[in-house]
Image 1 (cartoon, one colour):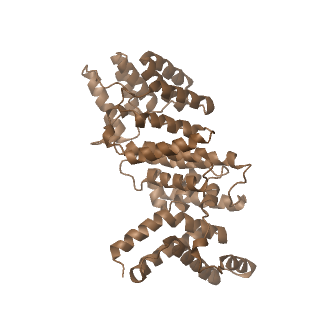
Image 2 (cartoon, rainbow, N blue to C red):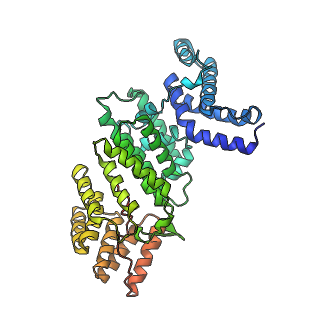
Image 3 (cartoon, rainbow, N blue to C red):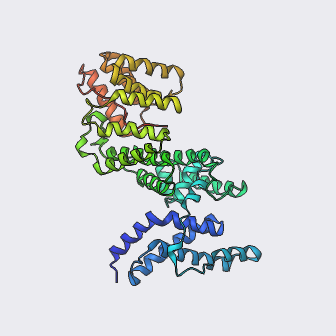
Length: 425
């Protein structure tokens, strides 16, 4: 008999690794999203009840898939009628039940359906977290700072849209894949970014995003942008735990680099090399290359800022964005001095595209401070403080304001106060 603690760990591990696969398989067989989720949940409940007695099966995913399929079959026998019942039951028949190793991985179909561009972006994120990551509606709502009822409505509407619009449950054909893949990658990276600034989140969204990134890389081995995204997330995740200390944001130049996760960095660098070897660079590979410059620099002084500025220039050329320009301004300031960076920041501010975005005045404040323009820097820090969305950022900016009010000019000014090692699309 397996110990209760061992069973709990095995079920938790299986939930993380297998939830999306089991749900995807049942949706593929029945076409019914709600039925698939309900029966998958019942299969995990059955595992908690039977594995302590029978032991953890050698292939938990196959056991869960077969159990969920059987529960779906039982449910349909009682609930479905007519030809639809016959069709669904026939789809659930499995003459190869004794060969569970042949169960195909259906998650790629599910990912592309959840991230279909016909769905609103917020709905894509919520549906992906629910069906692929297995988060509850309450967990998704807490992670995305919205209400549980609003989240539930997004998910319901997304499923209805999929059914009513006839959105196909499939991987796009090769000729459409380049058009559809960016939407999938954007959702995964958005999930990562939602969790990146969380200190005490209900669920580890960055971990969920990395898990989805690994799934995509495994299922799309010939797509260098999927690999580039995974590399970017791993290189960023390697230092996330050290961005906050005692409730205060720790800027990049103040972080103890000896505490960064070297295993994640090495994995990210290897993935980036493999992606670049394909000879098809894209925005996620470029952003990963920027993150790699930070990850491999011994300290802030010896960071290759000219290379980072060149990479941001390439990113701005291929995927122009005011946030990319703001990050480029930081790199240019590090390479060529604060006045050069301030000129670029002021150009971004003049467009009005980042009005209300706290990192615009925060970046300007840092460059003004380093240029010795203390009074202007303090006013910009105060503006950023009024806009900052998280407690650690507010605590950090308030510290800067206090320092400048006291006439103190901090010496650690070799990198910007924003987390310039993490790019944003």
